[in-house]
Image (cartoon, rainbow, N blue to C red; front, side, top):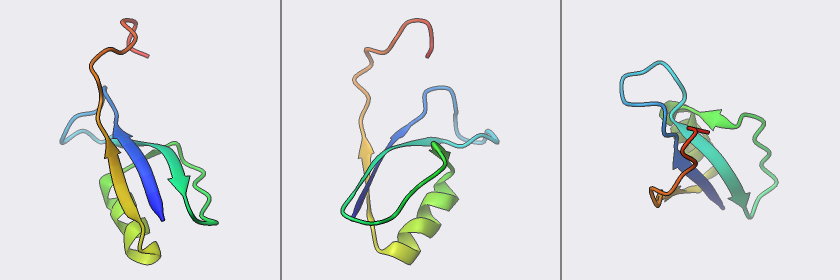
Length: 67
């Protein structure tokens, strides 16, 4: 199973905001109801499911309005 995530643009290290956004899940009956997850939450999901986390890279060509 793979969980695809990307790092959020507006959250940095040390902030009290979830840092990753779940983009998709492959190969399981796992349903994620949260759109954004913290690193510790992601690690806990991986520990219990044996999934691999795929960190998607940004191309730097996002929407200029900050969305």
